[in-house]
Length: 292
Image (cartoon, rainbow, N blue to C red):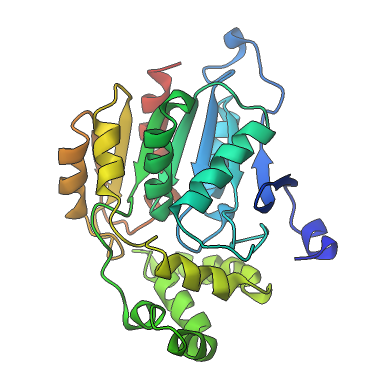
């Protein structure tokens, strides 16, 4: 990733311990409390396995319009963030979030939102740093149990073979996998056009391979159980027709986090906040407003 690529990306960039992170922070000058229901409240959006921060476009715009200081960023190896030569494991991603909050001087507890694999990252961050999290929202989160791997993802775990297989069919396999996140096929084309951009930068496939090999699609149930022991509000939202992380996984998470407020969005796949924002956004705003 060079300066020319970054200049076309939009957003901002900040150096952290493990590399440069691409981020966007709205309402950067906090409003007085009387000027908005979300004034001074910070919401942090953590995306999932391979789709960078544009996945939160509808949520970011909605929260910003409602006065929240809203932070979204690209995980290492995705989007316009660096692809460090590191183990892409939970420690890397939790460390990235911790370092980013420190670098941006966001010291007060935040409202943390995690999508899919980002849910596992968010829950683990909350379990390790409870003093930095005010509320936790989980959107079709991964990690209630290990995700059933497609043949391509299984091949990624094979040393030596994985690189060759992924080099031949990995790009198309990832695109097919991303397309399956939708219930409504009309939304797929534009989404994939934006998804492809990150694939041209060196290190993307290496980061994806390392994430699979380092348990990022495995079970994080202990993190969720630790959250369940805390006195923190939790919102859990699921798309009824999710085939990536099936709705049945929600039973395990509701047992792990009995305090969770739970909503199911009908005729919707793995990304309800993106596919059905008109239904998701009021649920989110109502939840966040309880703590303002």
